[in-house]
Length: 432
Image (tube, rainbow, N blue to C red):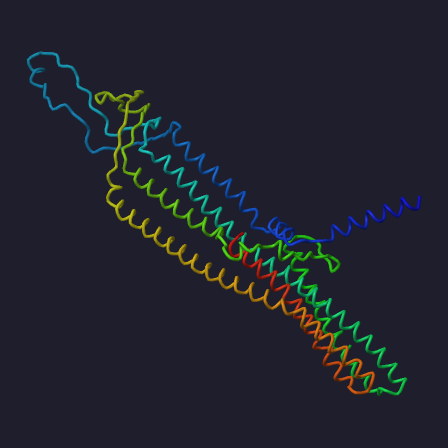
């Protein structure tokens, strides 16, 4: 029974430990899901769907209601005088005269048969505009990755510094014990303990600063990811060899979302050109108009009458040709501006890739000597410890060598984290 209980506790402990671990990829994904801008994507898609639906409704029958009441200075009259016929006894029919106040209400239904491609061009503009908004959203979301990288690797660097600080405090505690024994044997002076005590206090102050900085970094990362990260959360250090291969360092293709944005903008300009070309094309459609008024279609009737009229309508607006040439030139200028921006972007990215590749190679070369430097510093420190015990060196000499060794270890840890960050900077720059 005890074995089963222990196993259950062990299992829950493993689950708790696993849940307290965070990788860089997990933080990136959580930050994107928690970022307020994520809601914009669904809004862009909804707006696109509504706009396309509205554009498609142009093919549906269109209805228009009109009403008017007019007062005219003149009305239509038949320019004939039959008064002479009445004088000789001939009966003359009375010719009605229209009233100068006239009224008319009409309801017209029209159906597009051919619009010169205007509706289709409008739909292409809507789709291209939505694609521009979507790629702009991706560019903004992509910038979030760099911020997460900085916080994550900042935490890893602080973890290494805290680790080296703990090793330093342990080493100082061991030296404190050694010096106390030396004092008891009459080899060292009590003042030597003060030297060690000062170094211990300095190391504790540094640790306090490191812990405070780490908590601030963890809190900021927790806000970005929307998770309750604590000081006990373990941040998994990426493997440098797994993070990037030699092929990526030597040749890094550019897959940045900015390039998709440039292409989407040019596609939008092409769609606008199609819309301009369709604007001056003739329009063909059917119409049916029904109305009620005085007069109706019979202009000689002064009575309120219903009427209707239907047929085929052809319209061709040549006014669009006046500005079409200049509008097309403006679109070409805008495309040239986008192409220039794209060329400049690729130029700057190539410079960044070259600089980051050199930084990776530099850090790898430095790391080749770090282990040897630490080994030598450790050997020098141990030799100095022996001299202090023998009375041929002072505790100050020992503290100096201990500081050099600690700095060497910190430098190695910094080089390792800097290499990882340089690799992920390259991955971020090229989006690989």
